[in-house]
Length: 114
Length: 111
Image 1 (spheres, rainbow over the protein chains, first blue to last red):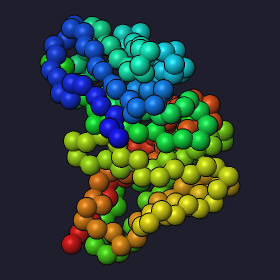
Image 2 (image 1 turned 180 degrees about the horizontal axis):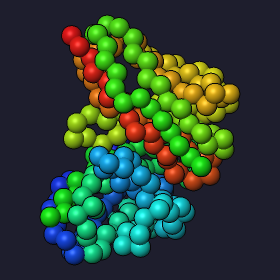
Image 3 (image 1 turned 60 degrees about the vertical axis):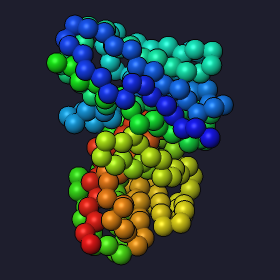
């Protein structure tokens, strides 16, 4: 059974550009949540999608957005990139939202903003 | 509010037991997770415990939960060099999948 797949694994952008990251959850999983990992702030929750609906949102500016498709694949977008957006972006896949359950993470997309 | 705390660093000798500690503050949290992160990799789920449980054991891993003190621990028996990594605890409320993570404990295993 394939795990959580994130693409691209590495990317370099310049300030002011925008970026789109993709996450394909484990087959049968309908929840995808996104996290940002930086040395200074650690792991912080961005948002969660379940059945194409955003269920929860973390404390990030509106430049960070996401969506989920009918096949449960999710994308997140960051517009007008800033140097501080350099981070490892992780997505987590789960069968359901809430209740008992395991959340499995992908390998992440490492974004460098120059 | 939610706050999860972990000590930064732990060093043990190969073959010894490791105990990684975590405290949390959100009284509404019902699920507590342990993840392992190796350099350059994502998060590997090790185990999770429901807040009405006191203990959970899975092979070399034992999780202990003290609900009164909001203290969670992960014990790794017979620690190996391959266990060297950063370990994160996280809490999650019953509704939704929003995890709140601690800052991570770096475990170093000396041969």
